[in-house]
Image (cartoon, rainbow, N blue to C red; front, side, top):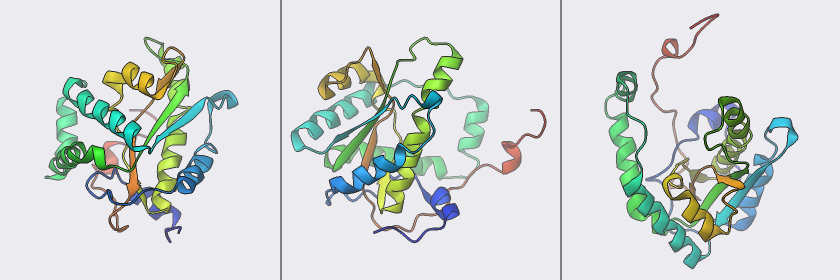
Length: 215
């Protein structure tokens, strides 16, 4: 079933879904394959098509990956927040609290998520200059966003996480990925959603982010 959404509705209501993942329903392989088919229609630098999508649904493998997700939470650091970060995060009171509440819920239930999708891209950007990083990430991010849009259209929910990053090499070993040649770009839980009535998220005003002619 494809949801009856206009293009604008699809773009504005494809949310980071954590608390409304249906943990009781398996996701049919054919739906995931449809999403990947649409994902790889995204633009890619120099038509290199270096993208890969690793899907984990088998129970034992899923448990191993879920355990890595949880262990990675305890060693993740992240960059320090700036004053502007904090201002934006709290522009709409309560919105950030809801995000972190969703993160805690996802961590507590990660073993129950029916499918994990780990997008990957050939070529590592460790210590690479900005132009190399931009080209590599610009060749996987559009495809992943297309995957997430396709999933939303089919009643599925996802959330982009970087849970793989602190333990990427170990996760690559579990998945049989050649770490020195392939970068695991993200970690996406995937499930049907509890309801499909998602709404646009509260954001800072357009005037804060739109610049004409110069900064």
